[in-house]
Length: 126
Image (cartoon, rainbow, N blue to C red; front, side, top):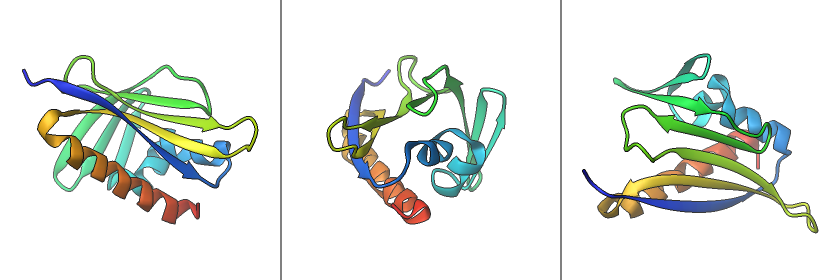
């Protein structure tokens, strides 16, 4: 089994947390930027990219703050998470992505998230 490395990326966004949360936690929202199509049955989400389908379970999280998904066919301890943080002084919002990648795919995984968040920013006007 390959070793997975946990990493975090932080992206400043100029948007309300409630508005952003719907793009991070609903099939319609995720289908606009994360995957070509997203379906859900309760806490089970199916992410579709072309002919590839991946399933993940949405884990219990804090509403409007954190959304975590556990891939069903992945390393047992890996997940991906969206966390919305608001600076108490400046009120600036940051989206923090936590994910896992194999060591030789770490740079590619980070670039993937940078591209996906750029796409999200275009869609939400942030």
